[in-house]
Length: 138
Image (cartoon, rainbow, N blue to C red; front, side, top):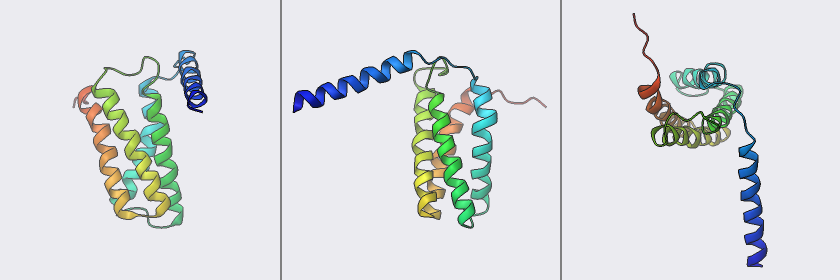
């Protein structure tokens, strides 16, 4: 039984490695952030400013935006997207984990959980933005 489980685990791992090797990035980090992540995060931030989602429709929208944020942040780990081997992946992982917590909070309609997860999500975003995002001059 142990050999069967080990064999299945190795097969799954090798399949994931081979699939990832075929991945070729098309969108830039800037494009992903501008068109996918920023609108999702802006929507969540607007809800946060209002004290959290206010009705069933907003809770559903929050769950969707959080899921999109988690999924799209995984793209930032792929291909040649990471800008370094420490800060970038650490903060991307923080965004992913916090966005997953946001999904759970939204599905449970948990305002306090939503607020806590938003803090982690924003912190993960700022961790890279403070280092890599060019400040506008003006």
